[in-house]
Image (cartoon, rainbow, N blue to C red; front, side, top):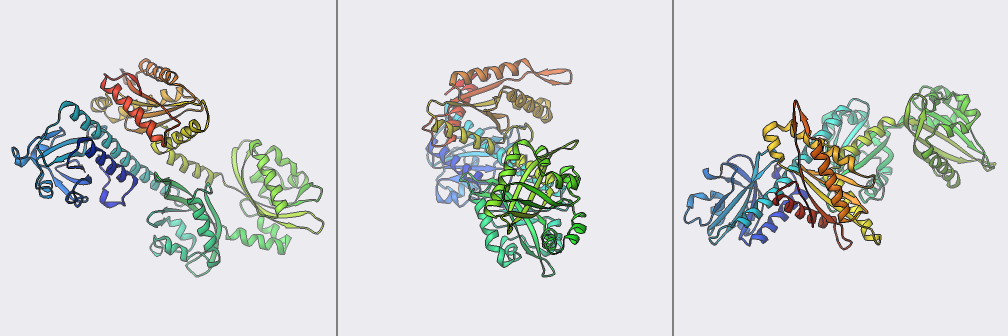
Length: 582
């Protein structure tokens, strides 16, 4: 298993969790120093350490393992004076008074060695059976964190491949690192402005130099509003300078797809569309109606003029031929009866459509709305409407606007959202999205008297043996099989997620611990009754479960997760295929 290098990326939330883990390990064992290294061979990299300043200086150093460390078994050396060649040279030089050493391997779900956890002390000592078990449990936790980090890197690679798949579709894609200020553009994005690939840099500061000076403050304020969580997405129309020095009007849309544990944005992905033609067309429509008709009938989408009378009645005074594609109507049908749209716009969106026009008329503000339509034989589609109102002398309002099909963009946005929140193997929530759901459930427990909820941790028993004997494809099949059983037992108000490897979590809303135990027993029963079919063989699966309640006094959702984890470990230690409650 190939691990991400800690020296090739900025110190992330994952690295901070490693630091916290080894500090907790140091405190638990009361040793002089603790170290975490990663690597599968005889040379390992120090990822994190806690202890004397000389060990801290090794944060990006390498450790060459003596021959006795080359396997994947734990190593304990009670007194290095009795075994002077048992200590890696880098640690011996950094800690000349080192006497005691223990190292526990970090193993991937497939059994591959990923690194080691080290206990270092300046006095001789030994580890009894209970302490060795605690060290193994810390190593299992660290291994899970490393696997989570690797899964995150794979998600990022998949996102890059998806961006390449839509490169050539005429949509400009950009990907911004909110921490470092790096921003990467697709080839099509650069082509929109007439640039070759090598002529556009990857710094946000350079990007802002292409924004029209009159639009820069608005663009930056809109991005900051999204970063602060005040808007669900970033969307602005502004001007960008082309390679020839002229400006184009573009519509930029984006969304933060990664946040750190403190709620700060990490990564934002979006699109840029050239809307210069639409802007120019709107101006020409005001100059000559005849020219407007000739031009707009050739444009994908519907150009319209909509008039509302003082008494509230309204009608379309002009629609382009694009109405056939947008609404499935002939132009004369819509100009004759504007209410024909009421049967085409999705019923759940019709009220928003009517209210948005009402507000635009009342406040004389631009009309903008994305909504769904149902066309015969076409299924559900998305439309985007934009128009500017103008007051009339008789008290009415006149809009000139444009409606376009944005179904493809909405599908891309939906795919990005699913990609950012879903575990691709099991189709359950990924860890980050599940933790957000758990936070929301804890908030309900805290604000609703008498409301209870429970969190359950599931761990497939002997999963490593399945991978070792049958291979990873069968292991993946077992994970998908279990996740399907889990989903069939969930109510609409419940949530489930894959926390990493063969570990899953479920939060049950408005249930007692006894009801949660019954849920766990049903899952165990279903799993026992439906083994995984592999060829002519049937592979029986079992699962251990730990259950804990969400307490109103919990300051963070991680507290209940930790309690269920402890219950799960008890179930594992007690023989597996058990249910334990905290």
